[in-house]
Image 1 (cartoon, rainbow, N blue to C red):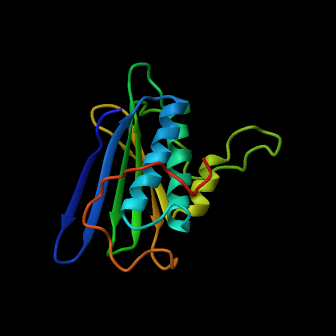
Image 2: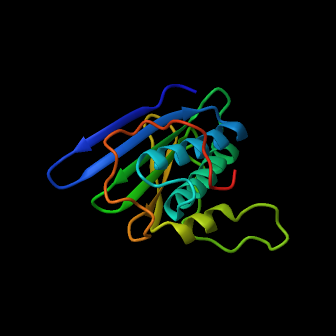
Length: 174
């Protein structure tokens, strides 16, 4: 895992914080992405047990698991990007992989009740305001989802000026 890129962008209209990181395309990489998302949300003022943090963690976990399962190319990592737009009260989750021709369905039939998989995007659709897929240059795709984080009553009045996750993730289920 490389050192995450973190940035705070301040303008007269909005405050946005972002984190970008690459992970090995494996189940362990997907778990690490989820844990990093929880730490990042805590730095942005959303503690691990908050609804906002748990929702973002679940969305990251599902999209990362899909990238590992359906978008894995040997020797290629998957990318995670989180962007907090404090003015809009949104966190945009982006997960990029190296397989562009295999895209998640926009909406599809419900999975088989006895099936062991196929519910991840249903959860993302239930938790996110919107979701989509865009091409990634030079290869692959980015699956994104936007999660509302304002109005839940679990965010302090100000967003921290730094965005450097530290310490173990706690609060949300593992």
